[in-house]
Length: 423
Image (cartoon, rainbow, N blue to C red):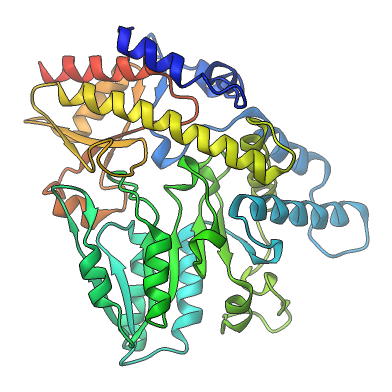
């Protein structure tokens, strides 16, 4: 390990109120995997993180010992009710919201389509929705369906491919008295750009519009606070922050209560149940709660919210150190082109997308895997971003840091890319 990486490895473990990276790694059985004679380094976290043992244990325990449907008068049903209530409380601490403002679903995309349909029932020609080029299409396509189904006009905020930053002047200009909703991502899953969604929400509200925030990519890389943001909706995916494949939505209580949601007549009409269509994925909810508890367990504090804030703040600082190392190392490799904000020039997540001149991104990812380094490639459903970068046909390679990423793994990645670029 280089002296720079040794110093960084020491710095990211300095905080004595959050567990060291080595201690964190002990919780992840997947980190013991070998591939092609190499220990696996997982840089695929932006597409789904590895899962710690306590999360899997919680899901298995539910299915083995408590599995039942809800609201009936026998023990396993009552235990399932208690599990869901506890999970709402855990996610409320994660969001800094009320428990009855937490909605569970299959995934962020399905939840967003559901909310879009409910809102769209009251919109029509003359109404407008503003989306952005930086967003994953899960926060674009649901709103675009209202264009064909309801006659709603969709306005799009561009971003600058050279800097990776959103055009805030354009955003402010597009918001007007006809705008009904602004859909914006807290961070780009493709290039790591972080948007100031509190500012965006303020602009939307001043125009009389609602704000729907996609927090999927940012949730693992910093503190989420819906009260500080002021948004009306915020959606995330637990499998991006060490949980199972599921979706969770924050919806402001008064807004949720007024939604014209598609639902069965016998289904509850109270919040938040009125947004939860059909029988839920109870084991996924158990795993979601366990993922929040796992994050909280990494730090000390008197309340879950306090522990989450300390944990995620420290993980964010560690991520900044690691992404700086990754960017600096990759930037020094001839033929490599990096995308997104340069670390230190603007807020970003520890996710870096890049290409190697003359080499298809799919092949680069394959060559990395041959060296025990797992990284994703393609457009990551952020199709507009990749198209604007000029790589729609082949996409880019994406490497992201997680709570278990080490400086040594960054060094392995940079060394592997240097070898691949020289082939």
